[in-house]
Image: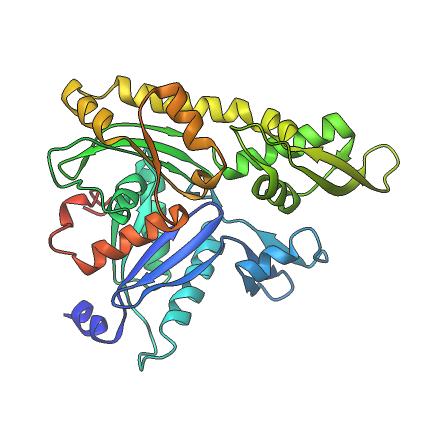
Length: 345
């Protein structure tokens, strides 16, 4: 009874709690929040100073009494308390124009493949404690497949590869369920770390994660004959002073290629574990790439060349998951089958 009462004054919400970004969808309105999964906390009074992009700008620049925290790692919660504070702030933000004093939304949240029962319960608990009245979980590749309008309810093989900030997940989906899958703890953050390590070892210069992300976006690629260049500033590890170096596209490709080969191998293993009838569908329909990592230039061509199956990068790949959770909210009864069993059942 109380759930129905609170539901009258609360908005149904879809959440993509990613390693690098948190996105929120409100039923009937669409995506309303897309921010970095970063929280800045004042340690003197334990209060949140900033969330998202504003907190990200403080990283590496804040005084000792301000802690910059990334509360999610590889798609799962690493800091329960900070995640709860972040979600409470988000729930309050999306309910500011309503009359309810205590927002109690129904939440559909995306979770990674291969999560343990403890990790699943942790996610459900933090969402409930942040103020949700009900929580429904859907696996990230399934949400992405729904978001890009793949016919997952039919007896057709759909192979989607979700390339996120902390995870890369390949899944063959048919009849609302995952038939074969592979989850790798490799994502955009892993590529950034490899770029940082490469520049440190080759040039003796230390750069930060935000600089590595900028390099990846501007000159990162895995296929083609261009060789763009970029000037990068960092700290000289020998002298301890600022230093500028010139790096090029081929060098960045060398830095990230080992990880990309591992992702391709994961896709290959997923196809090997797929029943022959569904493999035939995949060969005809191709592989769909989603997630922010899908925007890395030439990645689709590299996968197509190595797997010998057509590869398609979906429109606006970074928002595929949140669009999928939104479509589940909008057509809740027809898509109930995609939910994974709750740890509370």
